[in-house]
Image 1 (tube, rainbow, N blue to C red):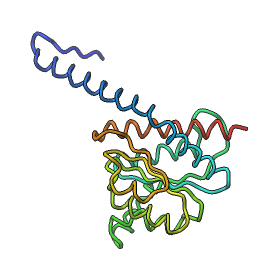
Image 2: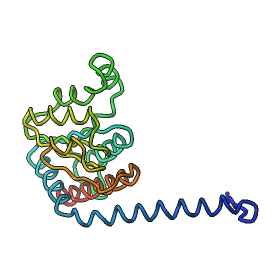
Image 3: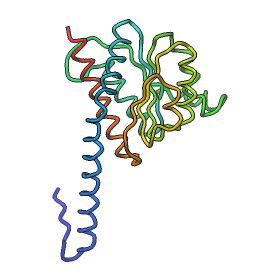
Image 4: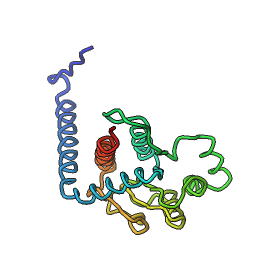
Length: 204
């Protein structure tokens, strides 16, 4: 179905819409292009991901809202596959089990929904990755702190300067933007890069 907006009937709406679309595309392009300045950090994270999986350890991912969706997206590509056939890999998103999430939130508080799972599932040398556009998500912060105390490697995909989380992880990748949507778009590109590296590494 084709939808036509009559420019003559709604001139203000048409040009406002056009301006909004152009602005979003330009902001997206600017943020994505800025990742070229962080290739070393992306390579470090990719190396850490590959090393974790090659040594038989697992990866735990977490985030809230759109970042929860990113955690699940990345886990799905690694447990399944991204673009190349290979064996499934031990990667878990801590955002998927509603019974676990709601029971922990009800009994221990929402700030502990990830910490409790990290305490139950993580082993030394596992990699725990937090995703937070603000860098200040309290439940992610607490879980990463707990992971470090258990001897896990910790990393985070962040934005808005990195917040408090950047101070508690082994490796942080901070998208240079204060726009939540643009940060999320950069995070999933980084996630896809990680998946591509893993695919190429574990292809038989």
